[in-house]
Image (cartoon, rainbow, N blue to C red; front, side, top):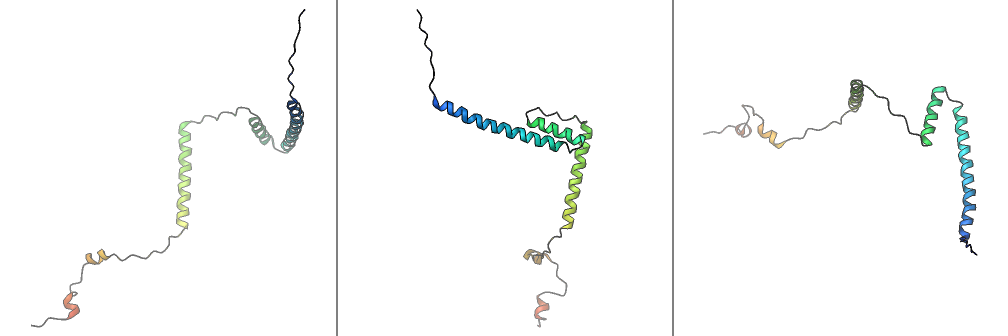
Amino acid sequence: SYQVYEFKKNNPKGKTNKAHSEGENNEEIIMKKARFEVYKFAQSGLTNAERQKSQFDLAIKLGAIPRKNKAINYKILKEERQAKRKAENDRVTLLEKNIKPKARRKKKDPKSKLHKKRKVGSGILKTYGKVKR
């Protein structure tokens, strides 16, 4: 004669949470479906190339691995980058030319006065007159 014991966990909180979470989960699923339907409807108005791109974007959103970038020849890549840099530099120089620099006053340097050459006729005698003996 064997006796079988069954263990049943009495957890009233778990039962209420399941019912509540199922309702939320159901609403969430309905919202996802509605969002997807709207997305599909929006795709119908696009051109073929745009539609394909939007499908790739949707797949990536849903967890697909994005495509790898296409390989570009290094020489061509360098030329493109150089052209971009040149265009950017040209744009910056044009902007600098358009913006006028503010007029600046020249600062009088006390040292520059000392280094100036004096005229032959100028000097102490000129300012005070001739010395008589």
